[in-house]
Length: 306
Image 1 (cartoon, rainbow, N blue to C red):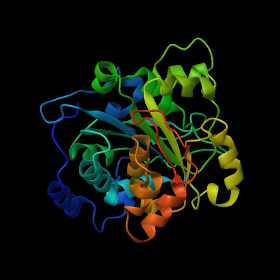
Image 2 (image 1 turned 45 degrees about the vertical axis):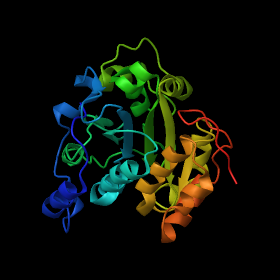
Image 3 (image 1 turned 90 degrees about the horizontal axis):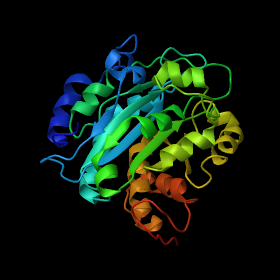
């Protein structure tokens, strides 16, 4: 999947008709998970080169939808997706973005702890994202199943960028809670239809994903669980992703932060990237990027920080 190109004019028309002035409940009206987004019923998601996108780059945005975290999907839908796509086109840190949306829940409590759209390059990604079910569940176990997207990306994605060009894709998880460590074999079988022989730890799943993906987690520091127990959240995540756990102070700068992380990973200077945004966004992005390492792997090689 991934034909077509993002068009800001088409987005403006779509947003005006279906999103602007609408409540979250109206924008996301699904009352259950659709079969086409059920990872247990998906054999493979594909990101393929095409005449429209000859050098495709797969990008996964996986947002927590438990409790009040439907705000992640809402923020991306109201203006985040348009900002993400148009800024990648303008700034060109990578070529021909193919975007997949995921919704994350809790594999111990929720009916749909993972939902997965197709990879799309145009307005179809927004149309699919609106059909995701904001289950709003979760449990009292101080964590969510943020590693299910990593396991899906490692086992159920086929991308030309990865297989033909040896280029890593980008995978961003976004939320407010600690990460539940790994997944049980029963969860892997039930929710991804993968015949696991044993439980997998968080480090094992992450290592599987990192073979083909540059992986980041964005902590929404001023939202939900993280707003009053940020130390617990950061301790949990930094044990897995010590240099790529990103502390975001405002969800309003989510898309700009994702674009900025891609730019820095591709070799841009952090100070230059942060300064390229206007107003308060520049300050929020600078704060989010401040702990990135002085050198980066991925597709960009060596980076130099101020």
